[in-house]
Length: 73
Image (cartoon, rainbow, N blue to C red; front, side, top):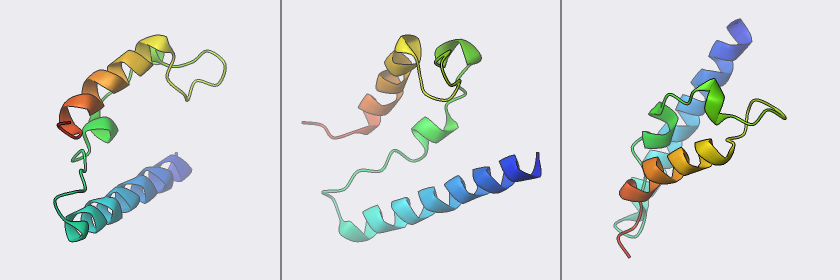
C-alpha cells in the first residue's frame, strides 16, 4: 500500500509540473486541471488483460472527460 501512495504522489507531482509548464508556455497550451486524473474509473472500464488500460467503455469515458477541457478547434 505504501508503494501505491508513493506512485500516486509522484503522479500528483508530475501533474503539478505539467500545469506549471503549460501556464508558463501561454495560451497555446491547454491543461485539463486534473480532469482525467480525478475521474474515478471503475473496474468495469478497465481492460481484462492488464486491469490498467481502459477498455472500450473506459476509452469512451476518457474521451468524454478530456474533450471538453481540450482545445476549442
